[in-house]
Image 1 (tube, helix red, strand yellow):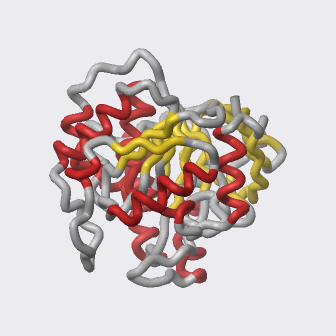
Image 2 (tube, rainbow, N blue to C red):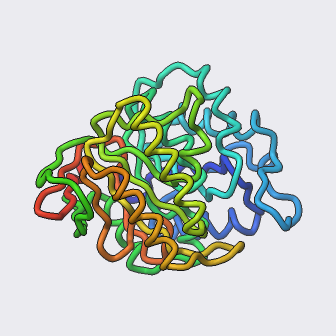
Length: 305
């Protein structure tokens, strides 16, 4: 884990940042006694504000930035934000040789595409946790910020989360966790980067998706499980109620989609995190992906080291 004055490589592999946003990120990390490093910053800066979240910087440049971070001497790569467009750099990433040394990689939301690649091809552990644009501008709570900082500074020994069991007869599950933002996962179906959930705990969360859209994503997963006979050991549901600029989902419709998932997969243990702190939310807590975890007595446990 990190020590004071360690370097943090900041990458924007989806939606770009402005100079002001990068400056705020740098100041935030300095306040945590960490150093920020931006590769190819002048080529990756958002020149003017836009009304959309498209990644306006060429995928090759965004990849070259990530490549430099992967090959640097820093222990950690921390994504500035998600947004849109991370999957566009996968063709470049696929041509890279696996690095000799894994790193701490922090990202979620649109970064799910990259997380899947790093877990499935390089065996990296991923931290799905607040990204730097969120911590720098306080769009996640102080509690959330403290949780990720305590974790990366080695002050947390174990992550524990209370769960609600929705289905299944299994009382204990030991497996690696994979998954992330369900709409991004669905966008990788039928590609080389399709998620491998075989004998793993499948973690699903999202923001601003109506119940009807979630139901569609969930049924895709149900159909793939039925057709391939490849099952996860368990499914872990995070938060789905966070709104985005396009709207806030109705809780009742989300509940219908989850109930349909449970009804369609009665033979798989399905759990829901109890207070909605995993995934998009103001009080977002960190979760390791690609790491062995235990669900026992309706509680998720992960060793931090």
